Length: 179
Image: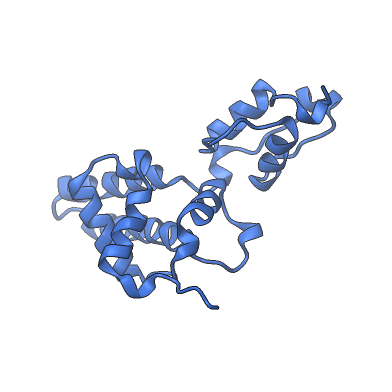
């Protein structure tokens, strides 16, 4: 068996898992190496791989569910704080919501796909988002509010629900095939 066709190393798998990548099929060492490079990892030849320095998780954009947790935490903090420090906390909540909206909008953007900010955004675009024109922030927030209310872990377990809800509520955003 050729080195490139072997299964990924445990370090490659750990790096990908730590950065939110969930494979939908078995990867090879070469495929894992390409994904790690896309995520900003600095891989050296196989002999030096054991000493390779990996980028910190803080350097990468958060995954869909992590963005939701961040927005929920900001909302709860604001609710618990009452009037003291509300302005700063309102800003934190608005920022968290904006990051979350931008994440879902990015999954529908066709331009610059080879430079997708995260593997998760790229995968969601390829599986679902490529069928849609990019929605606006109001449309995205409408969908996020509805799904968050209906299903606590939808973005972690069933991100495809975003696109199903988008299609049902905003059919004009579905891309039409040109013949």
